[in-house]
Length: 272
Picture 1: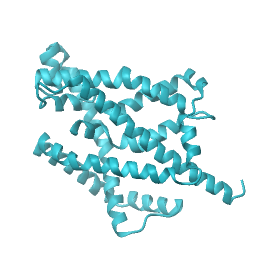
Picture 2: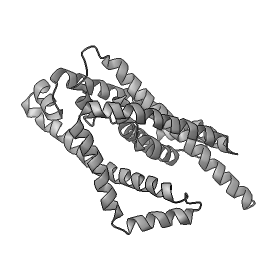
Picture 3: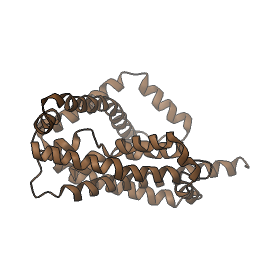
Picture 4: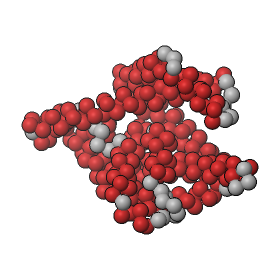
């Protein structure tokens, strides 16, 4: 459950639908999905398996694992992995801080009903000192999780991950009941095969898999330090990676269905 908690996050719900839409052709985004699934098996799953093996065999962090398994001259590789992951944390903590603020705001205020109201909320947040406060809050939550250890993360994830999945599934069901939503579903899964000749699409599919699963960040390596010998590495790598990408598809169904419904209703209102 903790491994799935690593993988599932903003990269699935916030980033994947946007990247799929950006790389979709006039007829659909299905070609991007093909490249994305290919890199799931060529990139994400092999890297997760490798991280599990390195962590379980060495019982050390990223630097120690590289030193233990391939020699001291490769210690810089483990250090580079740690550096990149730390840099990504800076980026993610900003997003998490905004999410915390938005959640608290919605507890006491109604959701913005117009684009202008949404922009006003965002601009007011940016213009204040609140981003620093909530950025620090997000970092503090992460630091507390590290201080309490992996066992505490596992306990929390047993509640948070099923809750997140339930919210996503309910949101998908609601989105698909909107008028015109299935036009968005059709667009998402309709391939425009000529798009596969575009190198940018393949690069975006590879990048999205890295963001989706967290493969290559050293996260699974760190978790593998604590797993038992009887833990099925290959099986769980497949479960984690495929389960993660299923969440991405659910998020895309939710977003594409909602967007196509809203755009369709606006078009009808404007007589288009």
